Length: 151
Image (cartoon, rainbow, N blue to C red; front, side):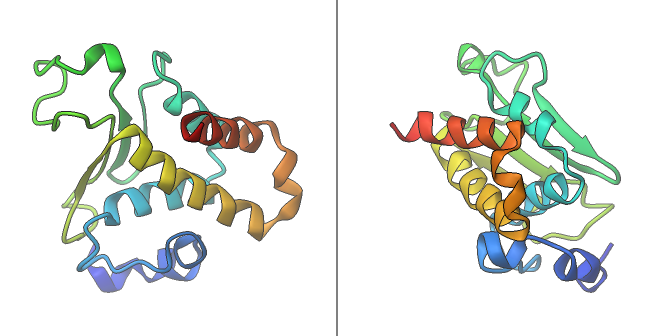
């Protein structure tokens, strides 16, 4: 899918509210914006809650066609065999299959704190679109995860 084919995601999304926009041809963080947007559009917050918890059985979320959001646990920090190419300190990786979507930067690594910043913005946009979501268990759990790390 080419940049111009991403119109659906730009027109039906949380990109502008959460991240100030989406420029797939230049945003270094386009992969994380894309993945979080799809998670929100598909209401997959229960899975996202599991992904942010260190040690959870669910270490990632993926979707069709070709995007993934992965977590590396603290205990696996030095496990290069299990996480080849992950930079030191990276706890999350967002990736988008280059054959499915053309992003200038199809992979993005983040520290836990860095990912929490994106998550906070995404959840705020999700709730702004429908304030009744504010008290749903998954939103409360995600906000608690963000606040726990900020403390």
